[in-house]
Image (cartoon, rainbow, N blue to C red; front, side):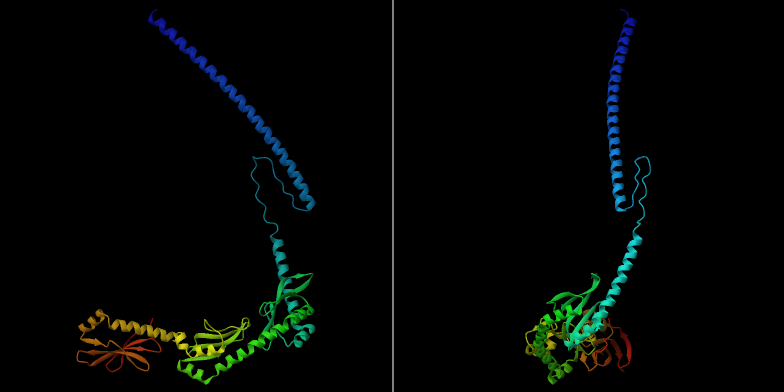
Length: 376
């Protein structure tokens, strides 16, 4: 067999193998396509069933909303359509209107309720019978006797059965009730009045003793010496007492009687009795910082100047000028003075710190101000 004939036979074999491979590939592809087509048909059928179910559910939901008088929304089933925009909040106007209604109703009930408990003949007669004085403060009515708080009535922000209601409570919050009539208030007062009177009766001697202490000549002399004074506090619901202040008006401490617990305190110190309170009052200068704000600043500035005149760099600077400054100041009635002298001891100037203002001045030998150093 010649070479040309051999090449022809090999070429025919290769071509035959290629055709067989292509045929196998086509058969396999056809089977895959058939399977995919069947799967797509199943998916389409499932989607169709789902869409049918959703439509039925939507119709049922629409029927239900229609019965309830609610707005019926429409939902398209065509997935190719654009998603509809969410509708605006159609209820905002209703919210606003209802809010206005309830606010106006609440204010109307406040006026009505307070007018009833402040002005009605039934309530005024009740107060007179118990020696109570009513005072309105916003949404509250305070009932006091002899300057002492007995009861607090706080109006509720809603009504029950169209009736205005108040939360009534005793000054010490031991007892509370909801009331809407003078009879209910009378029952509440009758249930608590004896106990409250007894409570205040126990505290009256303590309050009177504290008041006597504030007028004691020994205490007043001591306070004057320490540049302090005592003043009655404004009336409060749960405590009474006095403020002790510095000459600049700043508060040093308060001595208080807690009207709820009956405790006596001087600042943050708890006193077991008025005798212990008296002892503490006579040593205020050891218990508290009695310095005024300006005195604190002046003393701080004095410490600063005292450190400066001892500083080696500062004294070396003065030596280059032929000067010496006193290491300790001379205390005068209105100032602290650091004398500045030459090497022979002649006073050429004074560094002076004023006690009242905290200002630092530099005077010359004729006591004329050369310059001032502003306080911090």
